[in-house]
Image (cartoon, rainbow, N blue to C red; front, side, top):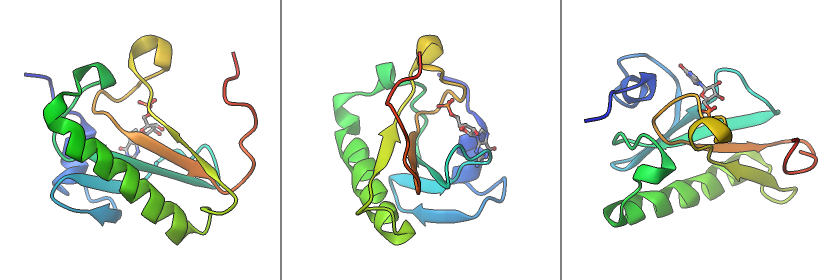
Length: 116
Ligand code: 5GP
């Protein structure tokens, strides 16, 4: 059993964080250290540590993460100009919190996809 992170506590609101969206599958809230004018995290309510741990039974949840991202991008007023959806995996991907999350970033031009 993987160890819970702070994100599970945010899902349960044990750490009060303003939520932008929550349903039975996913939760969305603003990143504490925004890297762009808009920086939102969309996470599954259940703990999935990394992209390597996603299973077929999670496909509905993964799809919901995308439809929620689309909805929030529209609400933020960034849908037409565009935005980027990012999921980092493990060390080379730069993952810091081991509870998968989709970064929704935008609100400004984001430049090249990778800065290696
Ligand atoms: P990663 O590097 O794992 O893809 O991204 C983790 C993200 O979670 C970072 O952008 C970081 O700023 C954000 N983060 C870490 N702890 C917290 C927290 O307690 N609250 C919020 N809202 N964001 C957090």
